[in-house]
Amino acid sequence: MSTSIPSWPRPGFQPGGQPNAFQLFCFSTGPLKSDVPMSAGRFGLPSPEAMQQVEVRELTREMDSAWFDGFRSGSLRAIATQALGDVSALDSATQLTAVLISRADAPDLSHLQAGWAVAQWLVARGVTVILDAQTNRFWKGAEVADWPATRPFALSSDVNIVVEAEPTAPSATIHTRGMQKFGRPDLVVRDVPGEQWDAVAGLVRALAGQLANGVVLRAGDRVNIDGKSLTLSSFKPTPETDLHLNNEALLVTL
Image (cartoon, rainbow, N blue to C red; front, side):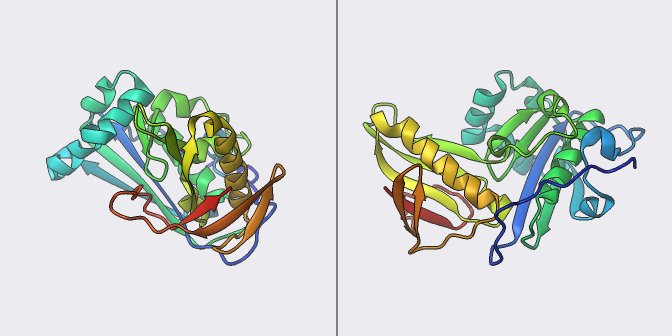
């Protein structure tokens, strides 16, 4: 393992956050190569200690074909098609390598660097498609492989801003996916008119950036983003409004 690189900081870190959870499901056709060493300098691993946060499990389709094929059917297939275009690599996959991380909330994001470093290492060993479970986002292995080892943290890579709307609906629900990686609640804005989608998505992105940097926000708080006063309350989904975030969420009222 070569020389490590600096950890991504959280300049606004406040104690009181939840554990940080990060899961990547990495798909390959056949077993992975065994002759590619992990290199901190090549793949962006911040330290040997960060590597100790990562659990790697190799699972084959033969173990549970129905479960395995669930990653390339139904709504996930639609998401994969939108992200990848050509889903043939996903369809031909016979092995899933899970990258699993859970750590106590901390003033750095070394766990994200470690998770993506392991993903890059797995791509070098044969992985072709990666599913980020927290954001529900598929990546081509080649895209992840191209990320520089010393890249700075980019919110857009680890948090998804989603506009949920029916094709002819005049309004949408705008929300985040991925804040569980930072031990922070996701954000939800309901009933956003079409002409405000871009502006509200920008506000949500800015607020998500504060949370990713370590700020702790709770129901009952009021915050100011770009001159807009926002009120936060607990998001309590009903069967009709459930976004399947698998994370606590705050309802943002403009």
